[in-house]
Amino acid sequence: MIKKFTIIMVLAFSFGGVCAQSEPAYKKGTFYAFWGWNKDAYTNSTIHFKGDDYDFTLYKVKASDKQNKWSYHDYLQLDRITIPQTNLRVGYFIKDNLAITLGVDHMKYVMDQDQTVDISGTVRPAFESMVNADKTIKLTDEFLKFEHTDGLNYINSEVEYYKPLYHKGILNINGFVGGGAGILLPRTNATLMGEERHDAFHLSGFGLSAKVGMNVDLWNLFFLRAEGKEGYINMPDIRTTYSSSDKAKQAFFFGEFVYAFGFHWHI
Image (tube, rainbow, N blue to C red):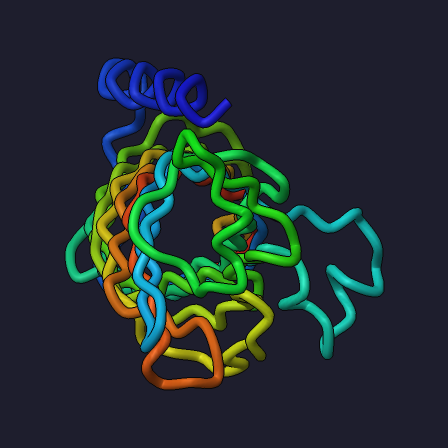
């Protein structure tokens, strides 16, 4: 879905130069802010776990996002609005059509439970019997649960370039492309070989991303947004248990589809 949306938006962005108005999509000095939600997909990853009495690597580990069913209680109630996968971003146009932004992509990453993967290295003696003769292991709850569900928090700054695509009356449709970089501040929920999890936010790594999307503006004030984003995440310092010596590291690519609503105003 993300790739299809990206292709459609690139074509629309290219075609917009032929049929759009001459006025800029947004003028210098305009601010905007939006709130929204996301759907995510992740590539398989290699995860390395290390502690005082173990040092092993899991290969081609599959993971999914964690979608919450729609409810007013989780999506709009102010004390619970970060329960789903959410997006918050603010931006300022330093030139006509060119904005710098700061935002948080609150994604969620859940290792698929009970999958069988290749393993190398050494596990704790009490768990050696779980490693098969062909050097594979089934990732049961007893051995490992691994999630970034409080979230996979990508705090990033981006540059966005906008182009007007369509205008009629109160309606403006503006396309945009952008890219940026940031840090990963997950609150990892990991249960590793029976140990108590590390239950706190931790600066774990960095991310890079690029995106394409569209704003549908009404009355030159309120807008609806759809964007497709793809990026790379590298986390070499993930806290897994209450022990400071227990760490993990992983890297993977992600795809993110964002749908949001927001406001913009000019000073």
